[in-house]
Every structure is written in C-alpha cells, then in structure tokens.
Amino acid sequence: MTMELTGRAAHRAEITARAEAEMAAMGVDVAFIDRLVETFYGHIVQHPDLGPVFDRRLSGRWPAHMVKMKAFWASVAFKTGAYGGKPVQAHHGVDGMAEGLFLQWLQLFSDTLTEIGATEEAHRWFLTSAERIAKSLVLSLFYNPALDDPRLQKAP
Ligand code: HEM
Image (tube, rainbow, N blue to C red; front, side, top):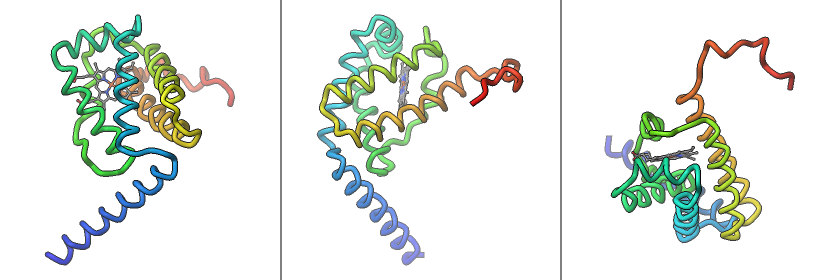
C-alpha cells in the first residue's frame, strides 16, 4: 500500500515536472499566469457586454474569483490539480449569459495574451485550451437536441 502511494506520488510529481518544463520553454511561469489573469479580468470588468454579466454575479466576491482563476490556469498549465472546482456548474444560472458572449470572451483573452507579450507558442496553447473549455461550456449551457438536425450541418 505504502509503495503504491509512493509510486503514485512520484508519478504525479513527474507529470508536474514535465508540464513545468514544457511551460517554461514557452515562457510560462507562475508570474505569467498572475499577469494573464489580472490583465484579462481588468479588461473583463471594463467590457460593455461581459463586464455587467461578471459583476452582477461576482459583486463582493472578486478577490476570491481572482484567486480561483489563478489556481485554475496554474492547474491547467502545470497539471498540478490545485483547482478542484466545478466550472460547468459555476456557469449555470448566470444572469445575462448568452452564447455570443463566448466569442467576445475568447477575443478578449487572445488580445490579452498579445498585450502581455505571450510567446507565439504560449498564445496558441492558452487560446486552444480556452477554446476547448469554452466549447464544452457552450454545449453544456446551450445544447438543444431539437436543433441538432444533421441536414442542417454545414459541409466541412
Ligand atoms: C461568456 C463567457 C463567460 C462568462 C460570462 C463567464 C462568467 C463566469 C462567472 C460569472 C463566474 C463566477 C461564478 C461564481 O463564482 O458564481 C465564472 C467562473 C469561472 N469561469 Fe467563467 N465565464 C465565461 C467563460 C469562461 C471560459 C471560456 C472559461 C475557461 C476557459 C471559464 C472558466 C471559469 C472558471 C474556472 C470559473 C470558476 C468556477 C468555480 O467556481 O470553480 N469561464 N465564470
């Protein structure tokens, strides 16, 4: 049992060390994640469409949200498991949430990556991760099987 636990811990440490090295090669460290999250949400609150949606829900809770989002991105980038939240549930029942807002969110995220001087690899990596998560959130929030008619699918 002890050997098994030691083995699992070593395996996890190896995964984290590899992820950290891969991130470092793209110029990503903890300070980068801090800058990304601080700059991004600084723009979110100023955004005419996204700002009010976040602010209504997070009024009085912004500091905790920032801590959570830094843990979230650190967890995704360094594979630490530091974030143990439930992102899908968190987006249900958000007043003013709309499918079209996700494109604006992604555009702002991309602009922020450019603004903070992310390397090309880091830009691509963070944007691709965000797009994948956004897609799964959109499906969980807005998917309507009644509208999912294969005849309406566009040809690739
Ligand atoms: C239109 C786009 C989006 C809106 C309006 C939105 C809004 C929000 C709001 C209001 C919260 C706070 C929920 C609460 O604590 O009550 C939240 C949490 C969160 N959001 Fe989003 N979000 C959007 C897109 C995304 C995307 C694309 C990602 C990931 C790449 C993301 C990741 C998260 C995470 C990880 C949390 C914390 C969940 C938790 O409590 O553990 N969001 N979001």
